[in-house]
Each structure stands twice: as C-alpha cells, then as structure tokens.
Length: 123
Image 1 (cartoon, rainbow, N blue to C red):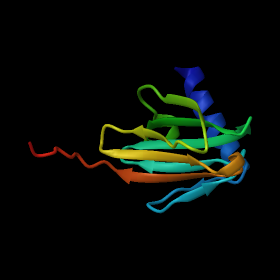
Image 2 (image 1 turned 120 degrees about the horizontal axis):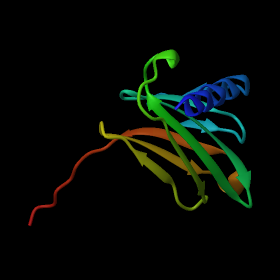
Image 3 (image 1 turned 90 degrees about the vertical axis):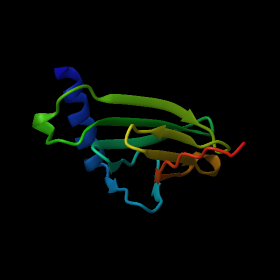
Image 4 (image 1 turned 60 degrees about the vertical axis):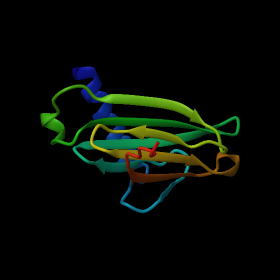
C-alpha cells in the first residue's frame, strides 16, 4: 500500500512538473508526455499518454479524492494502447465515464468526462 501511495504521489508530482492540465466538463486535449488531472465524482484521476507505433499508450491512476496524506483504500492503475480509430472508456460506480480518444498519428489525445445514462429499449 505504501508503495502504491508513493507511486500515485510520484506520478502526480511528475505530471504537475510536466505541465499538468485540469479537465472539466468540456473536452481537454493532451500532448504526449503531458499529464491531466480530473475530479470524477468522489475519485481523483491523473492520466498521461506516450506515442508508440501510431497508438496512444494511455496510463490512468485513480484513487479516492481525499487529501494525499489521507488516502484510504486502493488506487487503480489502468494502462492500455488506444488506436486512433477506437476510443477507450473507463466507467466509475457513480455514473461517470472518462472517454479517451487518440488523435491522428497519435499526436494528441482528447479526454471527456461523460455522464452515463441507462437506456432500456421498449419491447
């Protein structure tokens, strides 16, 4: 747990030093190696991507949105290669979705915080 907490702190500090952006309800554009910070319901997320072989190699760290010294529970680390043709989505238990879209030639990535809406078709 202490190692994971250190990883979250180190990644947060690295992203801040690299020019951290803050995402809001609108789209946010990320550049390779630049981090973005989100408040998603009761969660705090930090993400960045690196370009490799025409894909966006995305990393997202998510934990409870408490003060860093008071983090309780486990943090989640999600890493995936996102192709320009297909967005990646991360759903939260509180009805929010993070949508990451890789731009052409993996030169940029767009992220949106979306509200999930349940839909039940009528029979």
